[in-house]
Length: 116
Image (cartoon, rainbow, N blue to C red; front, side, top):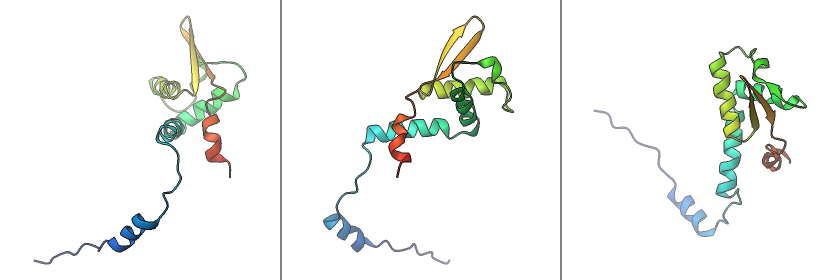
């Protein structure tokens, strides 16, 4: 029966780095989690299209105007809920309709990641 050999792990390089490398600067855990939640909410193409449509409106966008995304109404509602949970949009129910608006400062935490 043939035996398989696993690639050797270079422990000398890892040990040398552990002894002499300076720790890499990175985001604090809480900030990284906040940014990851925003990016995850925007990572879906339908959610990104919904968010940009809502953000492009100076006032509010009625849910009745968000039907042309090639997905069912329950799917649109699901994506709007995800955007709300991420803090990217606000909603207000008026009778049978819900109106959405973009939170103006929601994308501000992403600015340091996007600038050189």
